[in-house]
Length: 291
Ligand code: ATP
Image (cartoon, rainbow, N blue to C red):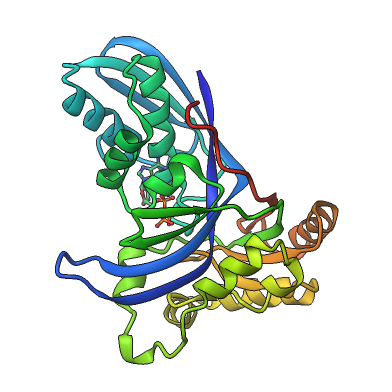
């Protein structure tokens, strides 16, 4: 069984405060885009064997797909039931695109089918929340507002597709570090979540560019000049809505159509070093309830 595991971008992130459990209280609007890893799952007698096309990604117990398989076994009383999972990595790692969270979410769906577990949406959402803040959203993707530490997800009906150019500088930003840099007193913006939600629900692409916001961006920008370079490249290419995704370092810009996104991406690839990755992407709709 092969499943596509989509990347996500954040069109808006507000941090509201630090919680007693160490996480931050956030509200964010996310959407999945058609940059995807492929996950190939197959049965084996026992244990989990993970392989990945990107040697930088750990394949042992630190990999979120291992954690997802372990959690399912434990909760469903499956002993050491076996699975092999190969990850064909295309989503840059630790890039603010939730690649690992998406892989974990698709492992839950895949094993639910492969092991005939019959878990329903609410069961999968609860398990996903234990694996990571972005995993519940990644189970179904599409467009949603997420709150709490990101695990409370309200899906929006936002007619698409929208088209973007993604510029991924060759560095990893640890989400924990980016969040730790945030200071409440430096956050002056009123929430744009309601505005951006209504603009997206109305399908008003022209207004979207002026609504985007990310509270994590100033600190990551200050520490990593690559963010400004990515922004400048996109601005020079004529993009209007430019924003860092998640805790970075990926930066995206809106494009009026897929052909224009492809043209800009092609142009930018000729202007950056080969270690920079540039993608033309389009939003994807919410998945069906199962694989
Ligand atoms: P988020 O936006 O949810 O913070 P991210 O895109 O910034 O996520 P990931 O690509 O998910 O970050 O990777 C974060 C860390 O998780 C990396 O250091 C990586 O080694 C580890 N990791 C564990 N499992 C995976 C996986 N299946 N794919 C990618 N990274 C993984």
